Image 1 (spheres, one colour):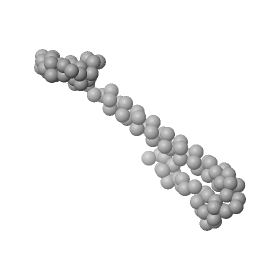
Image 2 (spheres, rainbow, N blue to C red):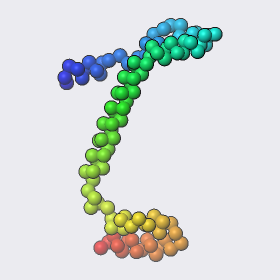
Image 3 (cartoon, rainbow, N blue to C red):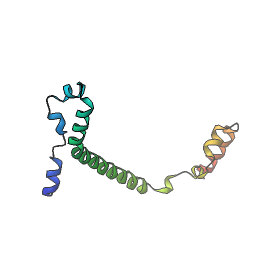
Image 4 (cartoon, rainbow, N blue to C red):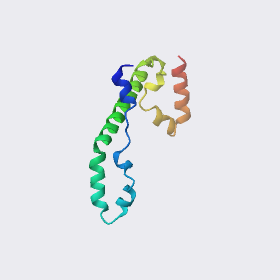
Length: 108
């Protein structure tokens, strides 16, 4: 792995405010609103890094899923699957007739 990539994996993404031993007391005290603003500002850069890392992972996952879907052969679909009304037909009052029709279509 390139040196930059290894350093990124080992990066400390813990929130700086969590290192404050008085955080819980400060957030439950009389000046809690001011402390929340203070801690939010303190944590903002790390939260941004975490969000960027999550977005990057989500994009990679989405790209992987998209390539896997594209790799699946379109021919694997049954001919009856091309009928946009198949689900409705199979759920309707003539479902048995449609089921036989689709079975015959797919057998060909």
